[in-house]
Length: 435
Ligand code: SAM
Ligand code: SF4
Image (cartoon, helix red, strand yellow):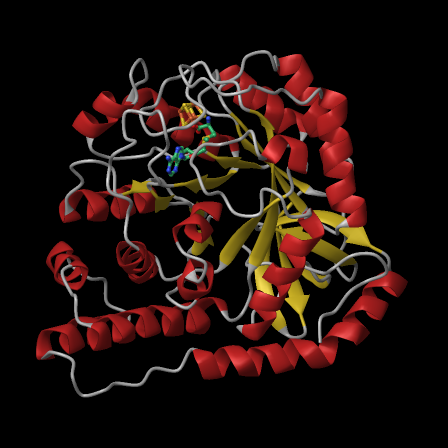
């Protein structure tokens, strides 16, 4: 059964704040505890909503108890489904080396680069299944069945950059759009009030039409709706990031794209890897929840590069890993590049889980473009977070960073319904993963 509140499907359930130490709180979900950053004036004993590891709003006792009463039975039923789906069975066809590497994972040891390379080279279906199942089992043991669901609002496809992979790069001859601040706020309000979202990701090309003043107003008004505001606006000044933090943004999505300097320089003319990394570190230092990562399958990428990308994401202190396959976009210099295989993507998820067992690993929208089952398979290979597109349909078609983006004609509600069904079929619950 899908739980639906009055008008909204539910992808966040309230919990009770049971302890506070400094700016960290402990939230209880039916006995399961998660640490969160406190960003509201809640007191111990009050009911709250947390998203992406941030305590974002309080909820009245009556409303929380009503929601929790509806949820209780389903909460434990979902856990059972997840436990069943995350068990590991060997087939006897696995090599001794693969079994030895996975045994290290099972006993909590870190894998060496050599171990990771050996797993990346696997091509036998039985062994790969064991790798994915082991990663999924680790996810279940460390994070239980919690799954974050955030809404992404793509508010402008103008960009001053010319990244070789991106369909909205400056020289693309596409129809451009900019949502006005009022349109952005209204779209976010619809997502929050009508669709029940508790976290809004504001994404755009690097578009300086949105000056600090405009961005700060958008962030402030959306934060006032009692939700987590994520920004994904590319490289802007440190002052802009500070100003938006002060306005209430608490999470940043900014990928470094590749740790390979040569590839970065070749594919992102006029931009600089060090500058991007410095901004990512600065955002983390300011206190933002950090989502960062890379593109899988850029030209010339070696297995070593892929491992370096995972390890760099970890060393940046990512709270959430965001990576996705390269999808060659028309009329870009990478138009003829081979698309990334689903297998490579699933291996990346599993290796990321092994490298950082507590991680939030995002199944990005590009997964769906790759293959209609990729989201499900990603969630079964160690991933535990999702983003859903909440951009109004008339603009969504124009945000063509790559072709074949799913749901460009579908109403937002339909996409949500399918996602919630997918999550429940896998036994995942919308409790916050904490920090
Ligand atoms: N302009 C901001 C930036 O670059 O950080 C945010 C918007 S940008 C479209 C978001 C992400 O899209 C980038 O970080 C990049 O990894 C991804 N992207 C762009 N083109 C892509 C493609 N053809 N295939 C896969 N991912 C792509
Ligand atoms: Fe612009 Fe981001 Fe696309 Fe690069 S990836 S062209 S910065 S929108």
